[in-house]
Image (cartoon, rainbow, N blue to C red; front, side, top):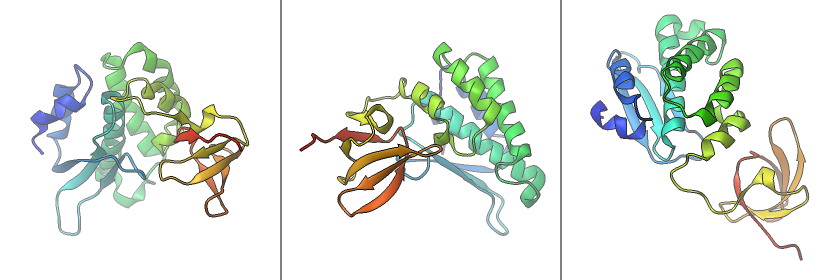
Length: 204
């Protein structure tokens, strides 16, 4: 893609800096429609290829878009330095990701409401962005469109609810990071993210 078009997806004041960073690498950047399973990804060059590949979801707000992009750039930088000698989310990646985030935090592109959640995020440097519930909740305030309904964590245990795909569940206890929920539709149990958008169902 033409990097000049990228600025409209980024926080104000960060576009030029991000574009200059990306131009340093043989990189193919793809902006894709929202995916349920991931917000972005990185793939090293194919065999005998030279281009790194990064994709980022288009349905993210500007701040989430930048964070995900930096997450994937960190993967690219670590691959270039260590290849397979470093773990995908090991100490080297965490240090690189923190360094990239700090540059943009120090330059003031993130609003005050994100400063504290981002500082905590940098300390833990989660392998999965969606594992950081506090940061996701803070970022949700800056979404392009407010989604109808509730997040799973907002409803009480044993409440019946409907998911985006139409299945009906009963909310169960919280495990380490997700809730165990019983699906009334197919009689199976699932673990569901606390920030998943749901619609409460009136109790019979």
